[in-house]
Image 1 (cartoon, rainbow, N blue to C red):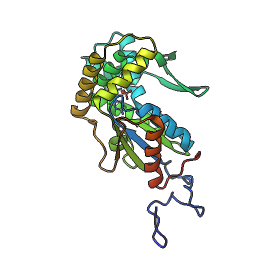
Image 2 (cartoon, rainbow, N blue to C red):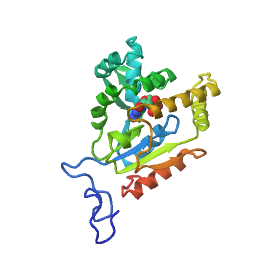
Image 3 (cartoon, rainbow, N blue to C red):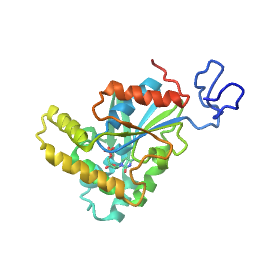
Image 4 (cartoon, rainbow, N blue to C red):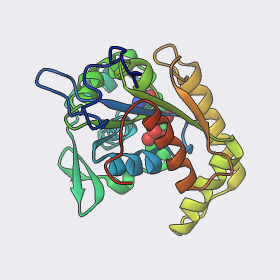
Length: 254
Ligand code: DC
């Protein structure tokens, strides 16, 4: 926030009450990006932060997962990039708020549950390494930037999709903790899983996401890293909101 007598560092920022002013006509809506590896808690935290801000929410991973699911439905070979690029253009993804629960429709079919499977995640990770797929999804992601603001979660939200975001957070947690969280999630749903298998998958996915040539997983230079290892959800939300407040943005609900 600009000190007295200084020019504000962002014209859209402060009104006379010290609150964040809504973007004026022609000004892009403000964005908060929350990036990080799978299992870092991005989804849960981003949704809660969006709620507290009263802003829109983008789960960018769901777009990649949706293409993965559609590719599975179409028996498309994950080793055939040209077919996957065609599939990306052909796949219609809709997000619906169903009484506070986010549902995702892929080509008109509710695929919310299928999107969360390890198979969809692995397919998404393979598909996400194809530059033309990332390019094809760029504008679709940017279209979510609408007033009063957007909280966007993913891998490259702060680095590639919204480099001008007002606040950027990079959430991390140890691979063991992330595998443990996923284990609990799946066990709670009655799915029988093997913890060491989950850990192996997480490490393999991290390596693929971090080492790919396009938009590899890494914090933006101006991102604040929050390590969530050993922290509860409320504590993480508090730390993210502290970053957001520091950036001059004011949560709607305290
Ligand atoms: O966040 P997630 O687990 O739902 O993401 C699924 C996969 O999609 C992940 O392995 C990497 C990819 N992804 C990506 O490359 N860029 C994003 N912005 C979001 C997800």
